[in-house]
Length: 435
Image (cartoon, rainbow, N blue to C red; front, side, top):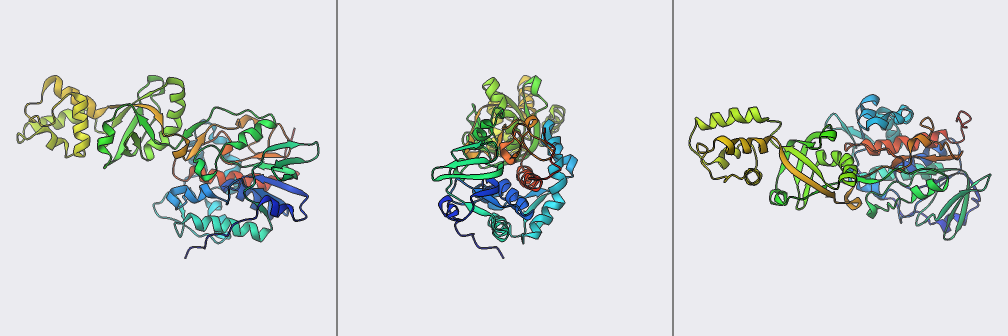
C-alpha cells in the first residue's frame, strides 16, 4: 500500500516566523541529495534548515525511473565506481557510508521497503516514487528539520563567522552550508543550475556542462519511419578513430528526430561533449545482435541456395521491415530485389551497412529531456572524504552539482543519496580534515 502524497511545506516566511535565527546547517535544495543530507545532520542533533525554490520537495525524484524511482543497483562498490569513469574513485567514502546494502537499510529504516526484481535494479516495493518522497519527508518532520519551499536563494556568502543565505524576504544564517541544488537537467522539475553560481561565489571552478542521459538528434531522417520499433541488443559506436572506445550495447529506439533508448542515453554523456567540440558525431550501428560481415556473407550464401524470394523477406527474419527497408536504401539497393540477383558490389555494400549502419548525430534534445547534467564543480576542489570544500571551510557540495555523472540504472540517484548522507554525516565533525 502506497503512502499518501505529502501536504505542502511551509514557505520561507513561515519558517522565519519561528525562533530560528541561527541554524547549525542550511541545506540549499530539496531534492534527493539535500533531503538525505538534512536527515543525516539532524540525526546527529544538528538544527537544520532546508530551502527549496520550487513549490514542493523532490519534484525530480518523483519523475525518476518513470515515476517508479530506481533507487540504486546491486553492483559492488568497485563495479559501481568504474561505471562513472575515471573520476569514479572520488565516490568511495560516500559509498562506504551508503552503498547499495546500506542504502536499502536506510530506506527500510524510514518505512520504505525495497525490492530487486531483475537482480540489478533496486526499487521501492510499491514501485512508486511518491512512496520514497513521503518516507524522506516524514523522516525530516520526525527529526524536526525546518523546511521552506518557494524560497529562491539569491546570494550566499560568509561573514567570517556564519554563512548568510539571502532570499527575497530576508536572510538566514547558519554555521555550515550544504549546496545540493542539482544541475540543469529536467528544468520542469525546478532545476536551474543556481548552485553553480553559489559555488563560484566561494571561489569554486565549474567545468563545462552538457545534457546527459538524453535522446540524440540525427541528420538522417530515416529513423522517423522506424519509430514503431525497439531494437534489442543494438551495438552503437562512435565512428571517430580517436573516440572509438565510446560504444555500448542495449535497447535502441528510433524517434521522429533521431534515437533514444538505454544504450543511447548512456552514451549521450560522452557524445554531448563531443558535439560541442566537433559539431556533429558520426556513429556506427549494428542492429542485428552483433552479426559481423563474415556472418552476413555466410548467411547470404545460405539464402542463395534457398528459394528465390525478395531480399526484404530474408532481411525481415532479422530486422523489422521498416528498418530493413531503410538499410537497403542506405546501401542503394531495391529491397524487392530477388535474393539470387544480389551479388558482387551490391551485396558487399549491403553487408557493410548491416554491420555498420552509419548515422550522424547533430545534437541532443537538450536539458528539457535530459536525466542528468555532465560537468559541474571541479572535484579536485572538494574533499572526497567529507564533501567539504577545500576553499571554504564549512561549505559542503553534493549530488549533481558536482562534476560526476553516471549511466542509467539507478547510478545517479544512488550517488545523490550517498553524497548527501556523507555531507550531512560529517558536518561539524572534529574528524573533518581542513587546511
